[in-house]
Image 1 (cartoon, rainbow, N blue to C red):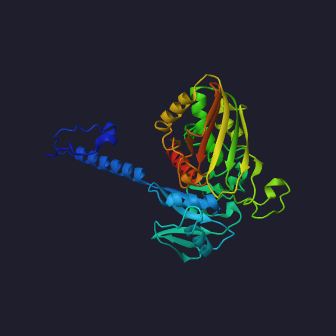
Image 2 (image 1 turned 120 degrees about the vertical axis):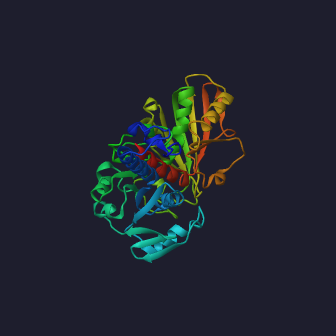
Image 3 (image 1 turned 45 degrees about the vertical axis):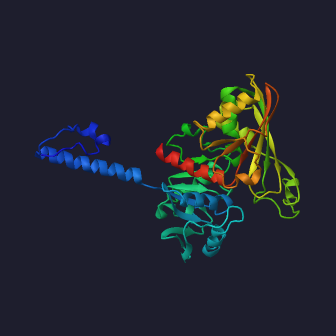
Length: 383
């Protein structure tokens, strides 16, 4: 006789209907046990399987997405493509970062011109310009992070599918790919969507805050300003910029007014706010961390203390890890490396009346956003 009271039947018992009391061996029981063990083993294998990811474009976001992946146990970096840098230079750029510091988690070295080693973990390196020629399938990449900033529409990003990728996440706003913001509308993702956008870093900061305010008090209309750190597209000294004359001025010497579609994009992830928000940007001489100023008229009157309370509750509840809350006397560098999308600064906001308020929220526009890229991939893999 054998007792099955110890056996993990929770995933299989409905299928096999084996009693949990002491039972006798019979040929049919042995066959059932064999099926049961195989079923449970397969369940464990599926549950433990890491999500395999490739990255196209090893710039600021590409490298930080790689750092996020390599510090997690549920995802695996299998390949990187960048036609503009050698494997040796790729190693240098990944290892040393002026903002986020030196990579210290495991030794990084070049095995050969097509392979990097992170500890003992090999990562395949490609240097291919045309996305459809990148053999993602051979490298085992199911998901590809499109972080070049070039292939941001569906047709261009779809080229990765020809190379064997199953899903593509664009790390930028897209004019036609569905946009998802984790914590706001990722639950609307359907498994038949193969190409999606993670929106922008600013939309990822603004949308959770706007969602809380709209859900609790209603937003009649609003204006957003993001005070945004320097990005790679700006100039170190004055230079030509035919589409944006002000954008061609020296980034480290100027506060530069600029356009942004981040506020309007909130209407795509929160349709109830479509047409109610717009905004602009000021590019400022800091290298990382930005801050959103959201000024709104409310449908339902609320004191500033009531608004703070609502945001704090959400930051400790459904939006924990996405939306933060602080009453400390913080400045921008205090948020370098913060993996939350949006951290509400309770002391920085003000109210003119119970229907007109200015709300302030910080975000690490590099690290927080890169973390959400990986979070979105994990969510998609479970759909």
